[in-house]
Image: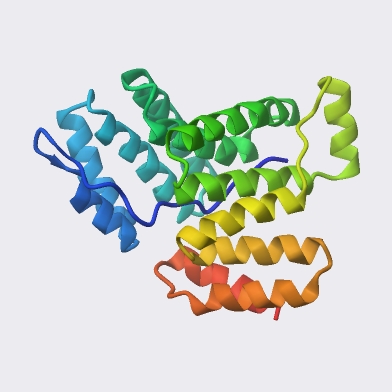
Length: 241
């Protein structure tokens, strides 16, 4: 099952476009004030639906908002709304890295609400969209992290699902934990985030490399906690120590 969760941008680009101050929205986002971001970007979108900088940030805001919810139907509705927005942003500017990235992230988040066949089929699209985003912006931390999560998810697919995937598709997606670690390490070197450190720890745990697992879980805990979602991540990290 390819299911990427907990992905976010720490530092947004500073863009001022016809009255829309992206830097102010991105500053709120960096501080984990996702409800305020959602309110501001919703208002901006109502005023201008043809600004790619607004539309992709609205897609991102849908992802962030659903992540904190417990009601599965509400979460799915927000993910689907964000996916529509990401596709609209791609139509506005196909060369922009961010719409492709958020389409991939939202498609992955949709994995909990669709069939196994759809998940496997979407996994190719998720990878392709992330690769397009990385080509457009090779040093984007979120894209590198997301590619790591894609590899981690594919590497963790069980034997039964692999057999089903092989029966449904001639060449099912393949990746290893080492592939995931490579992407996570590149992301961490650019920006040492809590979630990247946790993901590294998970990969080392699944490779039965306990020393490295504990090392990265401690690094996860050492990063300042910014949100309720990250508080839950801290609790998970402690369970590995």
